[in-house]
Amino acid sequence: MIGFPVRERKAFGMKRARKYAKRKKDTQISDSMMKTAYIFGGGLVVAVLALIAFSVATGRGESKTVQAAGGMDYAVSRLEMWEGEAIPPADTFLYDNTRSLVTETRYLVMPEEKTGDQDVAILMQLEDGTTRTENAVLAVKELVLHYELGSDTTAAELLGRGFEEAEISKPLKEFSSVGSYPLTVTNNGREKEFTLVVQDTVAPVLTFKNELKFYRHQKLSVMDFVQSCEDKSSVEYHFSREPDTMTEGIHEVTLVVTDAAGNSATAEVQYMVEGDGEPPVFEGIEEMHTIAGIPVSYMRGVTATDGSDGEVEFTAAEPEGFSFRKAGTYEITYTAEDKAGNVAEATAKLVVLPAISDIEKLTSDDVFRIGDKIIEGIKQNTNQNDQKAFARAIYNYVQEHMFYSDNKDILDWQHAAVIAIYNGYGDCRNYYAFARLLLTCGDIENMTVEKEKTADWQNNHYWNLVKINGAWYHFDTTPRFDVSDFFMWTDAQMDNYSARNQDCFNRDKSLYPPTPN
Image 1: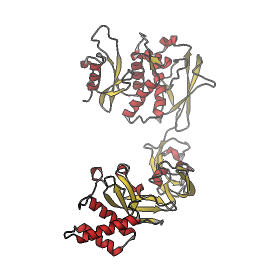
Image 2: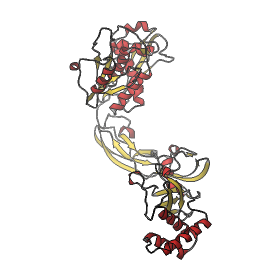
Image 3: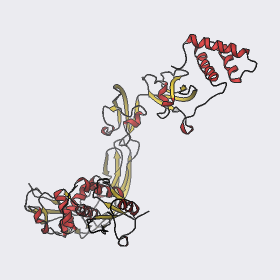
Image 4: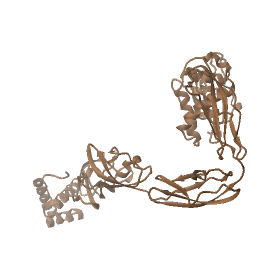
């Protein structure tokens, strides 16, 4: 608590008052303060005035104000707390970056434990002996949290300052329906009971498919019409009447969607009925090969086309008990279904070779099927629409699945990539080849860079150039002792490093596109 013991404070104030009364030229501040002290006497006001008088005396009659760095306030202008909580100490209002400048902090008037906003004044004694007063608002909130169903709002955001590390009895994402629920919040070892109001105030937003074309006698569902539906709660769909597919021509149907909160959206949709729905036809199915232990994707080069629907989706199923770790010949079954329910099936052989020594039996398509399988996994955890983030994920994958070891193989780059995948190690050529395979399968434009030796004793080196968001960058996944990340480096960065490391990135720049400066 700021100030001095009461006996010393009163004696000090009276002594200073008598001394100032005898002076012919009193300063305006001291005169005003002493008059106020005599009018109001002891208590809180005298304590504050005595402290200010002491500051004036020690400052040789000058009023001093210490500002925080950049002219900012020392304390926040608003602090929130929940009803039932103890009034926080005055120093709770201090910013973290000004706390070290303040030696003592107190309220001029103690706030009340009542719901709502109340004005407070914070008195601070600074480390240089001066004082400072700042006004703020203490907001006492009801123990009710309002959560919009399905939103990304966190419990910490709803609770506010001081609850950043709080734990709640049930994650907000688990509240799947509108209503009021009890919720226990544990913060700093203390529990508090809240009411969580889960609300949904927005009607569903429907997006319909661009081409609504069906076949005679086709059984239709709502999802044949709906491209997507955005809503924060579960929704129910229904037709005002069943859509007609008995006759060819243009028809109209009314679709209604209602969410769990009762918000509804209605739309009238036109559609076309024509054709008889022949089954799809597969193309590009061929025998596939891999090495035991290396999975492949079955989709490369395969299409399923329907006379009415155009290209349709298909699935590829492995036989029961299949394992990539077991050598043998297996049958993969492809299945495609058109919108009219016509189903087409086809099969292909998959030969799992027993050892890496059989690598030369792999075709170029086989190698790319291996790369496609890895890219499928990367895409599941990465937004491939963000080209930079997708390229970074590929870069990290290569480095996380290999360690450096001299290899010296003389096979082409595709087989060098498979060796890297199979062994989990390799030299710079394997790193480059592995990266090239994944970049190509990920549809990121890339090219090979080869080091130009400046001395016979130097080693060869290979790395990649990648085109990201319209610009070319260096992409070297091979780690070095001092730097392990050469992701999206510019020419200037590569040249600077090369000059300090025996021309390790020396190259004929006329062969490669320049990078941004």
